[in-house]
Length: 459
Image (cartoon, rainbow, N blue to C red):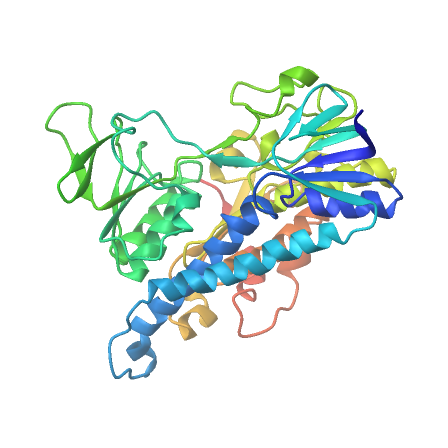
């Protein structure tokens, strides 16, 4: 006979543990299942470890630039990659163990370890254990997508998960994919000391961003020695005596990139193919993402999908917001929806790229009267004082309603500063609320009001 629970949560990524906390606090008896590492992608393979590595790379960059600030080092800086990995592992271990400890110590919560599979709309099997509940929450995340490239079965390659095990410095890292994950690793390992080449199938990196953003980011990377190869329409891998070659063109004898190691960073695929969704009648889309409505309910009553596996977002913050939406609807009679949130994201290159709301292309397509404020970071006093003058800030405003439609900040502190814009957007307040605000000097944020005071029509 199955063990009865009020709810079953599959996966301990960002949405699972806080939902478990709210359900148990409400008196529900729950089971939560984890088949691998507690904390999911963010804690073990994504945000926490990569940003820890980015911090080490930034320290290396500062050490090499020390003379610019009048700091004289007796010898050139040297990377200890084993120490870099050790520091990352310690931070990850603490976070993962903290999640597990919290769940195991949670009253009314039973933790199961192993692979979970649905055997019906109310039944979950975990190894020899059979669980039953009226409510099931799928929080199974995603994994790196491995494309069917020529030679992929003959040539060793790395994914972002594999990079967590690397404790050496690749001589020449080829990164296939010019988006979030790929660019962060590219800059990181260039700063560690590797030669780095980024290979992008399309005509430019960060293809979903406006061209002005793509060009600026490429200039930043190339200034540090990262090679960027775009227009690679026929990527194929081939073993070479000293590593690997990537063919970039369809014709024989065309362009190729030579390196010692290859990192595939071309997207992610949902962990839904071995979940037994067909047994429960849960519908998925053509890419395997669980189809959900605006409150994250699947087509099967009593089953929800949260986090990356529902295709509604690919970030820790969207996953956590999924939890908030589900908990509000279930426990607080608060009708929150996915469509209420404003898209926001960041690429943690250095300086970071932060984006919220519409970009230029989306604003033009909306048919609105668009005003734009644009300021180069080299004209921001705090950025000059810190010798961090790369990038720009750019704000889009509806000329009629005066509401802010979107913002892009590529520059030092941009991932923090942009939240002052985001909060005004959520309040649906006119841009004058922030353009007339007095900000502290000297800061990067003080130039937000100034830039909004100089709006011009978007060409």
